[in-house]
Image (cartoon, rainbow, N blue to C red; front, side, top):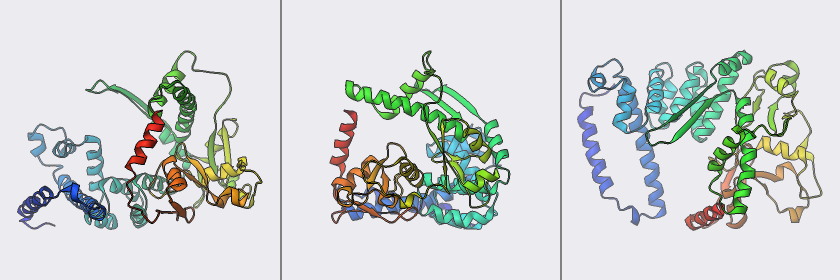
Length: 406
């Protein structure tokens, strides 16, 4: 696989890299040069990371890491790279499954896949090699989070008994709590998507109230910090609140699947942003007022027009399902999204689904005040900068950050 002199060749290359990197004055780089440097460094990192992981996998049965006092080759590699052991374990497990996956192996070796992307793809392709090309292609278009969601959908579609899959996830539910060496408390939980949706919705509902109070009272910290406050309040003696459901969970399910009792290829039953659930779970949840089921063969909202700026409930629901995250490519923000009218409402006077899109606050601000715009539709959105697309937006970021703190 490698020539006998590969170690000396890499050592010589490493010396050249040090020489080049040491001679770069990043303060003198213009925008184009800095952009090219970031892209080239990223490609080099992916290529070398692939070589490192595959070489480390070769040491699984060797004694060198044991002699150095490590519990596993993953722990040894993590120490060499200064990273966490968990991702190292995932990377080595992935490398061990590359044998029957030539498409993934080639893309990984050539630097077209990062270690994290390869881990996500192999998790699915190891069970269904036929999808490896599809997922490798998706990796070139999606963010890591988007690839993870796509892989999860593909994996779910491969499971014939979706109720069995749900039961297996349910049986693996876990919660861990620990304090690290910096005296920071951590909480980690594993559960089914519908359980997670309920927990997050309950916490976010209370966190929103806390943040509003914090902004008015001048003690607002951050959204994530106040989500912790909300969790602690809900766990307190008065956290139960009034009886009865008071939050909403969306489930998107094909009408035929809901009637049939299970999905078939090409159909979906999932909680947007959290993942697929069996149709049986959707049916069970439909008996609770906490759920809103959105049938994909429901109201034809595409043709709905409204004379006022307020968006009708069924149109808003359809928009939330169509745009579960900010529509700007590679932006994975899903919370606090704002609805944007593509054409000025004052000019058109109507509200239609194809004239709406959901943007995160940052991209909405750029579109409204800085000349950015977008075109296309679901699956083909394009984010278009103004003519002066290299303008420095750091000052704007500071203003928005200050406003959020206030």
